[in-house]
Length: 631
Image (tube, rainbow, N blue to C red):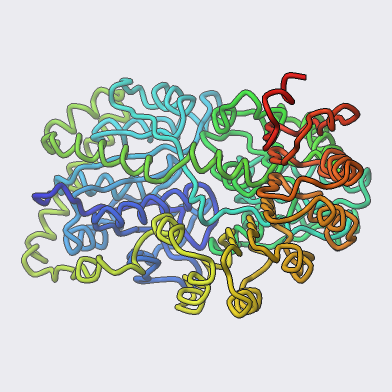
């Protein structure tokens, strides 16, 4: 441990990119945030096809793809001893102080943690899944988990349900387990309704490993039923796995190749666009400690249909969740089918979740900074503990049962002897130490995390953001292309306005304010058709007669329908009564998504024959006198 409490951390799991899934994303995001906090982080995983050796990801994250091929369900063959030389060399070369294993199913995680304990390195384990107790596979897996965690310094679970499950499976004390929920990089998962089909087509998104535990058999069961009932529904399925063959068989048998797209693995930087291309996100997991994909889908504003298993009910813990953005079903074909039909019918009726509102909720609920801070607390805690000696480890193994205790004691002794041989054959002092290039350039702006960069950009105007950063490099181009913009045309000259309209990506404008003496002339020339994400419109220096003209303009009809906030400020309110009444009727009858409205009125009697929209949450009336309000 360094003097400033900065650690050298090794994340290890069989599940990492290019695979997609909750574990893979968790390791990547947590690693990025730890790097942001000046910790050194590496990742160890097994080879994927031709991906062997050392690769670098964003922010200098080093990934070791070890030359071991997957044996079953993307995990390597458990051998314990064959991984010792390579893992030992990496841990010593990188001067690792903490080994952090992920997933109960990962052979590589358990073996690397075992080797780290032999080297006297502290270990942490994060359990991402739930498991049963009845069948032979469960009994065997639970026993392996018990002997692996009995000498682990601390365990992290992603939900309280997961914690209870892990305590029972591994026979652990509650004090040894902390609950740290997953999170989502909200800047990477922003809503974009323009990516959805323009027709009445409804797209259902599925993103998971195509394995039995993810409930792919349920998906296979409901696919034909949904496609027969709804002719305008399509499926997009991302992920790989052994169940892909079964899905293809169903597609060919039903002749629905044009309505079910198997996308394979989707890169993380393209997952946001993939999610936004659909209306509904479907999760059919049979066991799930915490479904990360649900959080990402909700952040993009998709309506979620999910099986009610494990820790999933904890994912979006709010009273309005069930009726607004997530439909929970029992883990059987009929119940999932009914839930999915309910979601499709809601989409048809236009009962779509408010994407931006839910994005803000997810951003506040699930932050990787919070996860990182709590993980650092765990790291600080285990670094105060002494490393566990071989003698004490053997004593702990004996507590796991006679047979398993004897076997693990034997394995630990043999591994210790192999390490002694390697220390003699390849002494630690002869192993070249890795150079930490990140510390040399850590203060560079481009190395900051996405969330921090977006916070910095909040202080800049859209024109400066586009001019300075859009073409800086691929990363910034991608960040800017996903950013929703707030545009203020107040005090702009004609030249500045013309320049701004030419370079601004109109579909990214979320908020538009026009406060200019020539407001009506500016509005007439703005290409509103391209502003599919416009949610906030603020107009000033405009009369009711001019507002009537805007509401009668066909090009602006769809724009007014999609607004959440509409404000009229500093307006000439001395218009004719019929103009005011016409505008008010349009506001309350043709703006179905309006939540906040600010309008100038002299007399509240204008409201006598009007019924505000049921979605309206707040109404601000300017210029009404107290006498008027008392009528």
